[in-house]
Image 1 (tube, rainbow, N blue to C red):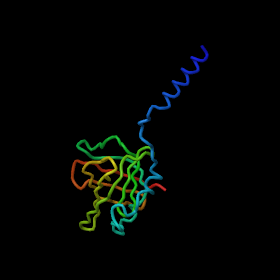
Image 2 (image 1 turned 90 degrees about the vertical axis):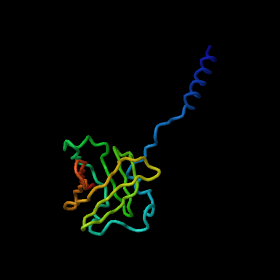
Image 3 (image 1 turned 120 degrees about the horizontal axis):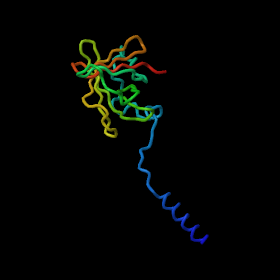
Image 4 (image 1 turned 30 degrees about the horizontal axis):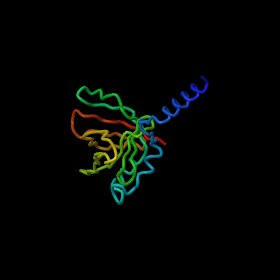
Length: 157
């Protein structure tokens, strides 16, 4: 009886240990952004010098706009911008998307669009925003059109 019980426990333990874990691996944003090669998309910096303050870690404060003007419930909490056109979006220290920043300069105003990397899922669709850096610690990403969303961020240290 003891032998049968012992082999049953051993068999069950072996079975459970062989079950494949399909849960995604968590990569924290603090380590991930540093692993993306600075030359992944561009050989040199693409952001004009007057907007170099964009490169930082930004905490989302609120989302406004849309048809009602009330925005929507945030589905991320941080956005990172790294030199040479790299962005990363995270929620609760888990990467939600990353990719390439594209720049449009018109009338001395910076507009960016975010293109997901081929290894990343698309987090935003049709994301094109005007950049407004207030003081040195507040970032507004505003829609150049009407009835879309605007994002307010505060710089993190």
